Image (cartoon, rainbow, N blue to C red):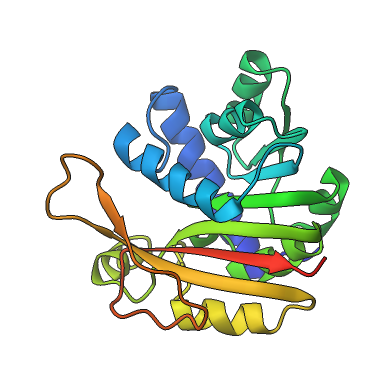
Length: 235
């Protein structure tokens, strides 16, 4: 069991928080603010993942299942959607029985091992809600040779994100680019890693975000609102 006390408390807190949100409005957005933001965030994650067809994919923090169903539409050979909110998993099982849905925490080593191994593991708007270090280490063991972890997460160095962190009093704990880079450097069998920032555009009539160029050091030119990163395992 890889959960730390902090991580376990976070999971319990956010499970209760989002269960209340789901009960109040079952079709409401659970995290991303609207469909334009969601579409672009999913797009940058899929771009970083590379080919999906014929791959085994794990969608951690699947919510209502939009990304999971999209991966199935891109002809993934297997898709597993995971979330800590039981109500969303029950709903997804009823709506999309061709996909495997499981309820559990991504830093729970026993639970993660029970899911199998994957070519692509997605963490979209997840790492701020868990012990992100133990989560990445646990999930890295489930990446198949040549596979990737792809994530989008708020940037701890960004002023807007820092306000959110203060509002949730230690339960909302995203990483900084330098912290991520240090963690990735400690993982075994890393073939390649890359990071980029995602920031709100002033003119959002087409898309809300502008993504910066990829870098390999974790050093971004400015503290972007969100981070997109990918870690590829050696074949």
